[in-house]
Length: 538
Image (cartoon, rainbow, N blue to C red; front, top):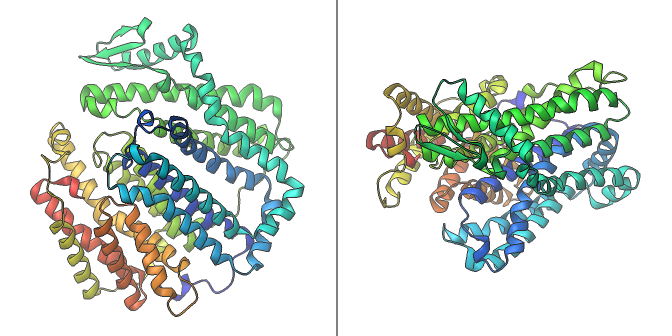
């Protein structure tokens, strides 16, 4: 890294919030990915159905709370600024970071030990690890920002109001569940059904419908619009976000205009977007793959999608002066594209979010990875100037290490139990579509994913987890490599790869070397996958 990218003075207090917020968001998205696609258990078979259901609800609560916290910090900058200022001066912050890391390790331990097996018989023990790990990780992140005394001292002023807002955000999933019976009313359910039907009529395709059963189909592909796909969860989320926004910015906002204009438009937009989502999935079922469409109705994708819609609504409200008694509070200081900290963390957050949404749309992992490639390109583009200033001089050792990792990854591939899962869905694509899919898949795998992962794991996390001791470097290497392995299905091979990339980076102190090694490894695997048709290997 060139000297111009090296920080020489402590960051201002509010900047301490950025890395914690982004890292916690990335971790939350990683938890979602693991929970949705790597864990196997059936609540009715666990013997602890209530606890199992509550655990599933924690994921949705975490999404909403993580989305509303930046809005609270924006509305109450003085409170957070004072707390963070004290935290910056307090010694011993690193021990809270290690408590956070310990909590994550405990949380992911059942997943690693299960190795893809059904966890239903051991669910009670796993639940203890999940809840205990989540508690430790949460406390560690909170006290990493500022020590307990600072939180306690400043909470006496605005703490009750902030706690009330966070509590309301955490109850949004419960509200969504409470309003789902509205779907059984003739008016709302028929209105959504007719809207989806109308959107599909615009395609000119022959549509068959059964409004009484809420069933529609085209060319033999049929769906039933059930409660979970009604869009009521999204409407509840947007409504509560709007109410929280109005409460937090009540001194600036023209409440009448907000209630009479903004909220009806936001709720209508939420309802319309849900209908568009269903119509698109019907078209996917007709023209691409019925399995892809049916398995695309994942509730987590809906939650994340409508969270983004709600945050977009907030951004629009801040940008329209007509809605405010006085000029809206400006957003936090800009210059994000020149922020090396954001350049290492933010693209990884985008990577996790895009991976979750793409995986939620497809029954076969990897089928929608081109969407992730597009998201990755959009995430790294604003920081291209910073990346260009990294030291990219060729290093034969980095290339050789990457090639060795790629060969190791291919050599240790488990024996396939049948044909590659991607073969059948890819065969349905026209030649041009297949070529585009392959190009985007290779581009994302070889160029973009290695850059984003190395920036985060070796460029940020490894340094943050290295204690100031002679042996601290090795602790950081092991911890960051273990975190890297936790997000890959093949734990042992990913851990070995992470260690190699870390050692390559430390050999000359150049992050670019680790990126090059990672690219070489992925290029080796991608070449093998293209030659054999085993696309699931990458």
